[in-house]
Image (tube, rainbow over all chains, first blue to last red):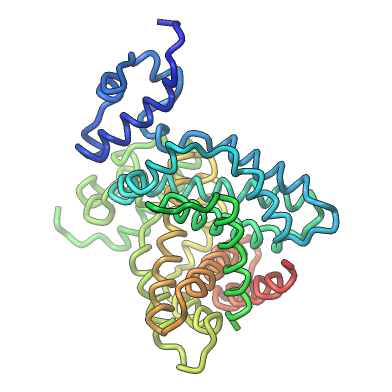
Length: 190
Length: 190
């Protein structure tokens, strides 16, 4: 109790992803996650409010990084250039462990409707943070919402590619690439 | 038991929206909803799987209507024209009661994180149905996802405007108007 546990957070995430993959999300308890990680339940709750949030932790920090990156973009930046600056700023948050967990984590989320809903809400939350940051730059409401939406799609696609086995490019490159593809696709919608 | 209850579904929705607005979503039970509607709990469960789905019923039908409308669009239609045809096809699902409930329903959803997550997932589900329908028309994956995303945003904005007190235009007009605005905004993103 109270003593410093090296890498507790990462150990808990690793244990949770392992157990969710092995037994399913519903059949895994917080006690089991803590045990597998060689930690106590108390330590678990110092890091996460509940079992579900092990999979979604960091959303607030991520929203803040995206918003800060958008705010710091040059005044002359277009809405999508500002979004790209937001994606650049978010890159520091990701760890090698997340890259490795990515595919299994996606499989766990895809298999559970509650987790899919939480994932959709997370994407919405990121888009809202970007919308607000764009509005503060004076971008009109609808253009802000739309650019933020493209940003959230690019973020998601970039993250997927970044976590694909064998992927070697950095997250920023992949997310910017996805944003460029989305911009090109937008021109074909008629 | 088993006898036909006139307008049971609408009475249940009305009772639920009233109770959620008065007491909050968490403090309302299925039994109370049924009582307020002058119906039994059994009747409730003939119409809805649980309390939450009173607010989200009809998603499957709506997805189907959007997809069918997209499929039936002329071969020459651009992706966004096909999406507009989907929005046209969805218009028949809405009732006058939904128009009236709209603002209170949005307030109930906004006040509860579980409901906000469900709403985000619903939007995702509608976008997925439209993405799939566009792909079947031969629209490339990314353009399909993007057009469907604009469609989901237009749907949401159209529905919001349609349910604003004093609004008199039809849903289709408002959703198409929102889609046009999104298309115009897309051209300003840089």
